[in-house]
Image (cartoon, rainbow, N blue to C red; front, side):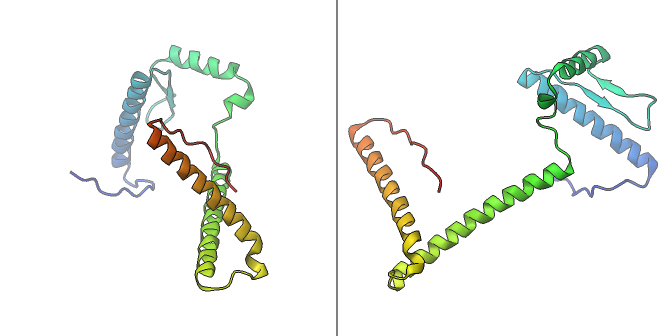
Length: 166
């Protein structure tokens, strides 16, 4: 049975909001319990809500204290290594998009060079530097293919070496 798409906004009906909170909280705690069992790690949850006085803790207060003490003993750099606010998230997303754009631009440029090679004279000064780079990349790939062929013919296991990205 499929689920309907949920819009993430405040539920206006208080009773529905309370029921949804309870169900989501139970689901979250169930997943957390499964994660601790399956992966053999220690975890805790502290949940503040308008429906109960004070925080709810999982699995129990002693375990939460132990884990919080363990966290506080770590250096600040390790405590905050994986923490991210909205600004950090957007910065990372922008960096990822810029990398993707750069790869797409490089691909586009290589396609343009390929078309130029197929249909025009490549003696233009515009292409000379890029053609040298392209020829180098092609030569490296040919060598890798030759090594694979030799390894297959000799029955050896072929281990791909990391190529330098340009």
